[in-house]
Structures are given as C-alpha cells and as structure tokens.
Image (cartoon, rainbow, N blue to C red):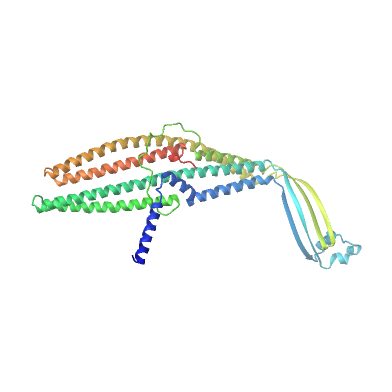
Length: 439
C-alpha cells in the first residue's frame, strides 16, 4: 500500500471518528446551550450586572465621602499672597506695611487637604434611592429569566421545525422513489402498446414537480438548522436531533395561573422601584443635614508651614425649586404608570393562558383528524394503485391519490408541530419550565 493511500485512509478514519463523536442534540441540550452561549442572552446578563452595580452605588450614598486635594501655588495677587503667608504661619509685622500689602512680591507654596463628608439626613432620599436601585436590579434579573424562557420557546419552534422539514424531505424522497417505479411500469406498458405515451409524459411532469418540492424541502431544512444554530449561539446545527417530535405522555393539566411568571415579577419590582424613585425625588425638597471634618496644610518648605483643621455641621433646604418640583411630579407620574402597567401585564398574562389552553385543545383535535385523514389517504392510494396495475383506474386518479396522501402527511406534520409548540406556549404563559428544562 502506498504512502498516499495510507494517508487518505487515515484521514478518512479520522473524519469518520469525528462524525461518530458528534452526539445527537436533544431539545433540552439546545435550550441550555442557548442560555449559555447566545450573545443576546449574554448581553442580558451584562444588563443585570449593570443594574446590580447601580444598586450598589445607590446603597453607598449613605457612606462617608473622603476627598483628598493637593496643590502648588505661585502668585503676587495681594489678597491671595497675604492669605498664603497666613496659612503658612509666617506673617510678620512688616507684612502689614501698606506698600507690601498693595504690591507684594510673588510667593510660592504647596500643600493639600483631606475632608470627610457624612450625610446625616437627606429627607429620605438615601434610603429611597437604595431601595429603588435594589428593586430595579431584581426586576432586571426577572426580565432576564423571562428572556431565557422566551428563547427556550423559540428553540422549541426551531428545533421541531427542523424535524418537520426533515420528515417532509424524507416523504418527498419516498414520493420520488414511487414515481420512478411508476415511470418504469408505465414505460414498459407504453412499449407494449398497452398505455398511451401521454401517460408517461404526465408522469415525467409529476416527477419534475416532485424534484422542485425536494429542492424546496432541502432549503427549508437548511434554513431551519441555520436558525436553530443562531438561537443556540453556534453555526448551523449539523448533528442529529434526538428528541422526537411526538411527545410521550398526556398534555399538561389546566392548573390555575400562579404568580411565578418572571415578567410579572419584573413588573411588580419595576412598580416598587418607581415608587421608591418618586420618594427620592420628593426628598429633594426636604432639608438635608451633613457633617464635614477636614484638615489642611500649606507650606513654604517641607520644614516650614502651617496646618489647620475644621469641623462643620450644616443644614441646607431648598425651600422652593421649580426644576426639583417638576422632577418630583414626573417621578410620581412614572410610579403611577408602572403600577398601571403591572395591572395590565397581569391581565395580559391571564389572557395568554386562556388563549394557550384553547390553542392546545385545537391542536389536539387537529392531530386526531390528521391521523384519520392520513390512514384514509394511505388506504385510498393503495386501492387505486392496485386498480391502476389492473388497468381499471386512470393514471390521473392515482396521481390525485398521491397528492392527497402528500397533503395528509403535511397536515399530520403540521398537527404534530402545533401540538408540541402549543404545549410549550402554555408552559410559557403559565410560567412553567418549557420542556421541563430549568437553569
């Protein structure tokens, strides 16, 4: 065996091993992969972290503030020069000479200060801002959970949509194989003079139509797998899909709506955050009390200069401020809007549950009807095919039977898809983990 042949064989074995190593993809794995890898959900996690950091910043408003300052100054401005000498503890009698006071020589100095400011009372703004930030962070966390569930719903639609497209492709292949066999049969009969040439031409036209259907089915399969890859944060999915389209077991029960939907939790928390923000805005019109402690130095050299300290307790009150009053009114209106939105989302959720349950019942009924239609179409085709081989049924009736069978298969696939996605939609509406998958 040549070296080139051995290399080709080795590459073939490696490629085969890689293909075998690719495990089938279940819908639960696809959902968890999307939660982990999808860029949209990663952006949502970054938003959650941002809100948490903002909440930490609001909580830190009650903490003391330390300010350090350093400076170096050279000036001959009369008042500043006299003040610098005073701060440097080097005022002498000659410095009170009017000539020196009016036209001092330029002096230099360097120094710094440290000040600690501690808010004592701010009209309730600090605690309100803290809770507003905390509720906003929790609301964003709940919104992220809802985004994950909506992504899971989209995964279910894409995953089983790909399965439907692949099954449709298999059935198109079956139809193509059947037409090829029928072409051979009719061609032999035409050569024997038992059938007209037009019958064979009609079959060739049907063959071309099936080829077009196959091309469209291939396009749908590729588009579905590409969409599934987009949702899971990867390239188009090429591995087999392991979760069957038809769900085993009974449909979920009609349990009452419980307040576990993440978007309802987010609406509740957003309303609380808006209420606390309104309190914080109203606090800007109340008095505030603060304490400041500090120490400073200004030196002529490292060994010569002055130092000082100070302590101050102050009260500040904006008795009237048009902008602050307008901001307070706006915040109060936003709080009312958030509260109304919470009530609307609750009503919307109850509506979605009712619609999802009705859609599931309709999907179950369509599935039963589709099964019966498929059985009837298969039996009709079998009978017409047998009669056609005996010369008792025209080719058009047989092709009509095949078209009816294709329609019944399509109806069955659509009913299975609707049944599976309707169950997922009911889970999404009630806040139940979709496909039983939890983070």
